[in-house]
Image (cartoon, rainbow, N blue to C red; front, side, top):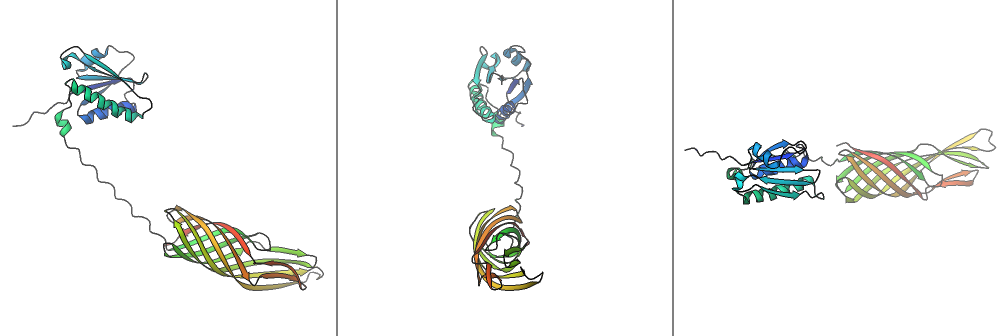
Length: 313
């Protein structure tokens, strides 16, 4: 024999703003408790609340006045077996709208239950629909083992500030260690002048680096390392009394350096990098005119750079 369907009590919510978030949330909470909820728009002071309840055919009516921050519940004579009951609750302006709605819905449910307007038992015991399966999480981006880095910086070491460009190929044999091969090119020559003449000095260098990453987060890392490199200085000089005749020379020296820096990953394959370095050549690069020492480079040299690195694979 089929069990007759249980009809949940009807609660009418009247308000001048049926689409307000607070009102929608209050109606949703009452529905979850097992009531049938009907939203009605109220214009001005349209009739007495008991008359509105009687016309609606509901078991109870809740009038929301967001202007005065109140919500009033009205229960008719047919439900209470006596005179109509009216109770007012104040909406706490310090709370979020959804919190106020949940608190008031629970108070109204408890009060209506005391007055004999309990939620439908079948509604309360109905199993909740299964939650939809969570979408599969994308596989994490693997760490790139090979990176290409390019940077612009300024170096100094006795010849003044020299803007330079750098290119680096970096491999990660382990997560916290990298090995690199790099090259640097001074973008403009250093000009050295004295009473004896003038010379333009161009610097090109290249070498290898080993960096450690003692602190590395998901998108931020600190690194420090040691490098060995060769520095080539090409000099083109003119003596003051040479009547336009000049002399070219080139010298290649070894150098060592210490570097440190920070990296910020801005995309899975792209990082911004800020670094600094200090090192020394052995021997130093000297500039001489007719045996007279004019300038030198490399003991020490130092500088900083800003660049970007791109993960290849």
